[in-house]
Image (cartoon, rainbow, N blue to C red; front, side):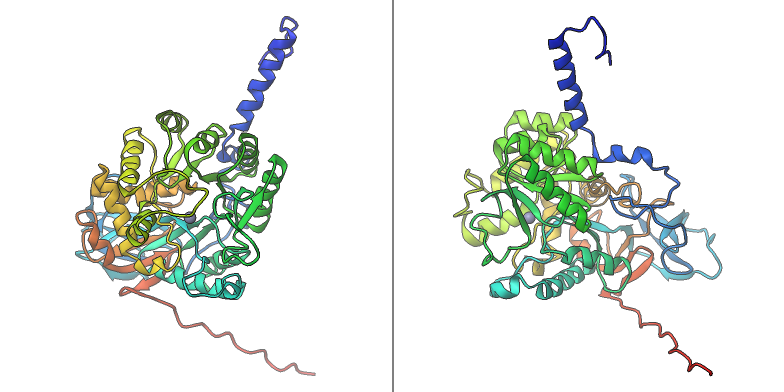
Length: 466
Ligand SMILES: [Zn+2]
């Protein structure tokens, strides 16, 4: 760009510089990857940290023989056999082929549907349940146990990845690591850490040390503090950044710019004009079906901003409480019908839509019905059933920034696979019939139950000889 051209006047130069600054601020998280050769082994998360080369996943091969393959790419289910070696899908064979390694473990899945593991893009694995004291709510020990229980629920429902968008302290990061080392059962955890919001903003209304969500929320004030709050989550190990209104334009712009520079996506829980400000700042996705203008929806479509409508928590709120009361961050009129209409408007505008459930309180106990009902609302909004399943798998992986490794059944992808005893691409209710789940090549649910292999003992040390 000709900024140094002698003919450019001072005003034009200032304008050009401002334009360049604007363009830089809109750099995406993924732009950071230009410095990483695709052949360089990196961590299987959006952080993409270089790791030593070497085989990953269990020894040997696993064959899912003769099932209905719904691969998540958008093509209809077809009969075939899926071959997994260690933690990767290596082949999808025609139904009559037996071209797999001779020593493979073979599981007959005839009549069952083999599909990519599901993703839930909106969880809070440590949030408290009703009738739990504040002292226990903010206890990292109790939060870890709550998280462990929820991970099991999600896994049993065929969910192999969760995106956790606010949880207590170090807990989601420790659980992420223990799951990835196969030491506790669970889906992959992609965690935001604390939710960042303006002082007294959403989730921080009345926040104090005596609040049950203390330690899951980071109040910030001023652009520098928003930037610092992003760095704090990155330091802990964040895979994405979660923002919430309220904020100033400068605050949300600083946070998004910092997240992108660190290689992370930013998602926002916001409403009305705050959504406009966040989208202008380059935020990658917007949570919830809350009110926004046609202009904002157009801008989302234009900039490729995704949306995770999360209708189900609001259905529970309206059904259980008759309304959404007492919140200063929800000062607008909305309803179940308005939420569904927002989903329809977003879909009509061509916005990328992902699936998340936001099951706070004890609502995870409504799984898998909660997740299936969310998908049924995608169908009510105009999706076909297979399209809803693609949203729950491939599109969710795109929103996660993991679509090069997850979300479809294709050779080279990580082996996160769900086997359902039915045809969920015909009837979503069949998603409740989870038979087998494979995460990272490991069988983690078998016969519908979490499968924990017996530990392999290592021999005790031999006495030293003098
Ligand atoms: Zn939430």
